[in-house]
Length: 485
Image (cartoon, rainbow, N blue to C red; front, side, top):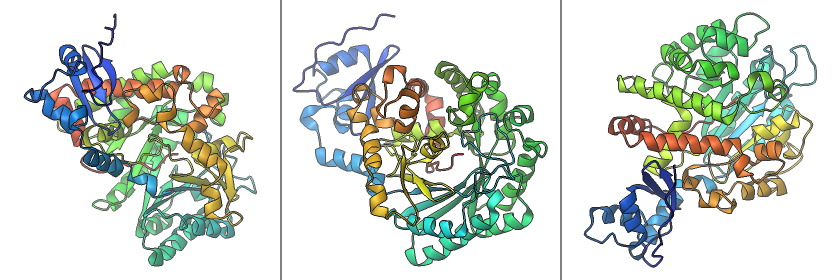
């Protein structure tokens, strides 16, 4: 299809905007996070400054900062500042890797875990104390401590110590403290669960879909992983009914997943999950070696994602509430002009300024992806060590500064002119690993392709009144998602 040439712009009457054609309509966005969708004729009138004050469109364009002579900068800047409040808080997510040992051999293991009988890969209580002390140095009013691995329950004494020490420390610090445990559940028992739930720890497990798919992806050395997950899922869900914490799950999309998007969604719905995160696979760790067997192209993933989201929307139209996390984050930004501070999808990204990852030996990385890269013998993104370097030294590390600069979309050659800039984000660590540069080479960047494709899909669906109502319903509660495996 031939794209119409851009008509002349009356710069004295038109406010700053970016545009993207969506079929026969045109999407306009601006730096304040606002958007409007115009038909071709109205877009031409807008560019020429011919939408007058009495025109029904004028009020909306004026309120959103698209009309130069009627821009309320004070109000618009307050809107922008409110949606970017996280920029002044400091690291909120603190990922603690208490062990690299694991009893699974997942075909896509991105963390490069080690066998259960390996020594020297557990965090000590002494190191854990130093890590927690450093976590509370962050000025963020809300802190999330997330246990990852390996399998965290393989080092249960240190998990328990961190929970108790953090809760005790917070009695005098008064932060909003969230504790998350990412676990495959196979080492769970009633005593551990009682402690975790009594302490208010939220639990997140992995569920890749129906039993055949899950067990093929997540090979459990002790039996059937899926059956164990479902057993504990049901028990935890029952015990946490009505509480602010409970159990969630993440799925990782592999080549096997592409053929069964509906079945994956139905598995989650059948277990009473609130939603699903259709997480892309990244080629870190073992996934790099097995990519030909488990990986896929961005185009293939996007086709899978659209089919899955169509199915999810269909479920919602039948009066069943269920959402997809990535879509929920985008929709919250688009419809509410609020940034839920999802660290993988914000500008600048959260690496070093929104999150930090602490390895079992106390070394600190800008993010979990950076920690994964370290297991591939690349220490580029190590920014210090607990007990050795102070908080100010760590967050002011040159690498943190470089990532913050590289993840500001306004300074990216193609991102700066993209209509999706207000809603999007990039990962400099992934760019460095896949493209050899912190700054994305956008035309060849798979994450960019997928993000644009998802947002094209969402804006397309927003034109349907019933579907818009469904998508809007997903924004009624906070869309933050800190847990990632």
